[in-house]
Length: 616
Image (cartoon, rainbow, N blue to C red; front, side):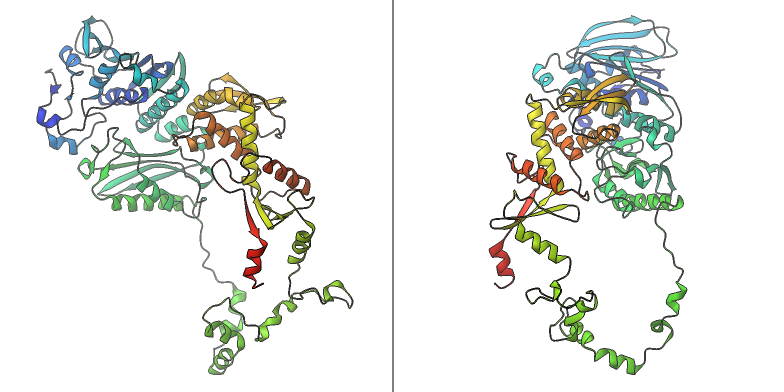
């Protein structure tokens, strides 16, 4: 067969974006996996060591390359997938720029072994710093094995910018998931430092999703399938109860290529409107198939952002398809159009509204009060409505306190305890406090009164407590009588391994148990035992919420995540003793007025300002 890889002409190469920059090991993993898929492989094995810093190797059983192609593939802009500039707008392959291997060879030591099925021997090439060191025949099976070693060995400054091994491995796992999820009919495996993290057998898309995202979705996936002449949409969305407070399990694929699109994500949020909280994110894995000429994927170096020719149509199709799927599975709320028989018997329904009734209604004081002033909330004192509260107040006996002249007869019963409490409290250190809506704590100070948000206040208290613990004063650990076992998906297991040293400072004694499992041997002494699994899972979710904010380091993210997770939530009833301890701890903090995230912990109401409000 003739050689198929040719060097692009300069005029075409100049119209393609600048070379693929290998920013981190995960960038190389993405390109090598995509090349293996384009080679027609059915089995792809990814092997990494030291989070890709010392080794990234991809072994596939694809069609392989000839000796000439093996040399040519490392040239800049050399590709078998583009012949002219129009091909850029009809891309059907994963990799297409002809820059990945050239970029990899420029910053790593590369060993390539490849063999075509019809050839007797394969080709072995060793490249270092873009220079071919060795080339010789090699005996091997059909396919390609490419290994890149010592990433950035010749660019020490860039190597110093790499994160910790655990952090870089998480990025590799993310790229592996995105590629392997798009091709459930292929076998994938990921091995890190000799330990296999993923072993993904060929199967259906649903099986692949469960393999990658966890068994919790096994019975909570809703199928989405809509075919039109313009585009096809298929995949799965999670039921509303699977929605999480943080992003992570949201995947869009266009022609099997993972993309990021806030615009399409907004369409998904609209489809789940009123079924999940405004601060929650639904799980979805959706594939969009449409004519490659309708999209432009050459707008971003990582090809994760694309342009649609008519994105409004795609938006509408996605939202409609997901709503239809949820409705088919009886997920969406239903409306009951049957009329209540008792309502039909009311006079307002079965009797005519005569002119006499209309005149009587319009002449009433209530009607005039609402219409003449053009505001429904205004009730004039001179109308007969001024005594409306008397209808609801209980009848009192003569001589009772409620008939004393100094008490306002129109003050509601709920206001009286509050008023008496305010007169008792003289300063924040008072013995009595008032909790409103199981969320706010009210207390009087010298200039008026303040309202404290209990969760925000507790977050500040816990955060400064954790700061002290990290500085050296460890939090006491309570050993678990029955240690809890936690099973995590591989990417979360990698993250937890990274956080174990800091968690130990904070009172969590957690040990790896093999195969993405962990055993919680102890928890902080002041935390109730029994929900260790929930706490750890929520901390990981909250931690990932901060991962996109570069101004936070790893430890800071963990402290803020734990403070949010362990803080007493709004809606929790507190005793007076608990409120007192919380307030004392709050005002003992270095910054008692704000949470770690900048939200206010309390607000003050000054007496002179309140006097002005009431004209005093």
